[in-house]
Length: 115
Length: 219
Ligand SMILES: Nc1nc2c(ncn2[C@@H]2O[C@H](COP(=O)(O)OP(=O)(O)OP(=O)(O)O)[C@@H](O)[C@H]2O)c(=O)[nH]1
Ligand SMILES: [Mg+2]
Ligand SMILES: [Zn+2]
Image (cartoon, rainbow over all chains, first blue to last red; front, side):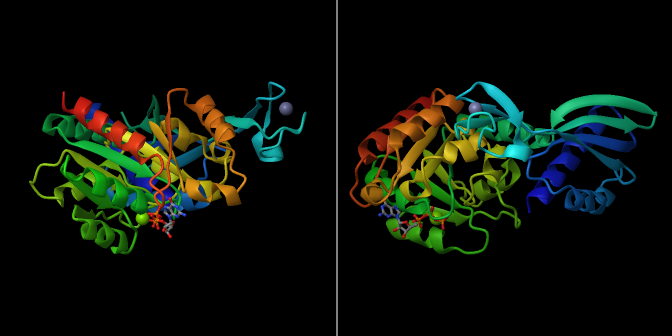
């Protein structure tokens, strides 16, 4: 239930931001979601639509997900390559000594609010 | 309509709660250690032995975050330490709010050291700060030395890596040096212990580290 856990925290973060900045309604929330963050986007949006109703500040907010491509670094040949296409094995040299550089994050990019 | 740029992680509110909890625990002089690992890596067995060895020296309690059973809590109580079942609300990880509620379940008795046995998995627990003073991860020999490559976040977030079940090393091709150098690429300051709860190998060094941390946490 990873998605639900994240949604609960997302809702709480947004409520706190709204309280601090005296925001009455958030109408849109844009998240940057890494390609390999493990978040199942359809299920994530379903969870959001279910939970937002509990929060008056969020209850009409649309959730927009922007995908951040995952990039892996090969430590053997010092090059980067797209993670989703090649996985853990470097397509240039075949090494398995590879590290994810980005693509696992989940960041609140921006919110749209009523003025 | 107006757009406000935030650029904060989705778990920012949890990070703030965790910071507050850590501050409160520091004031009380209670060190909370968040223990993370895959299912069956040997978390409860490590705790049993550690508590047996250290219970005369320190007041120790354990919070067991099993999704749906109290088997581990019962094992800990048999050793003679206080244990509570931490409720994860069906989640794959503990967060700061759940940790706070579990700590309340331990009552008003003062403890020097509280262990949180987190939910068994190498992904989600790493993403949620529980408010613990130290994070310790276990990797058992049968799991393989490539895990730092597969679960980088867990290795980057942990202060300590304990390689467990070293007694079975002859039957597996676990390369300790390769594992440690992979872990250190992600986290240059990670402390590493290699232990066997069967033979007791490595426990002295691990327990010495625990004593030191409890001491420094108090001041
Ligand atoms: N050979 C050997 N077996 C071990 C060692 N430590 C634990 N085990 C065995 O590994 C199995 C799992 O150990 P636990 O301590 O229950 O593991 P855990 O990580 O708490 O498991 P969960 O709470 O179910 O995720 C048990 O059968 C233990 O006896 C060890 O050092 N050597
Ligand atoms: Mg256990
Ligand atoms: Zn390469």
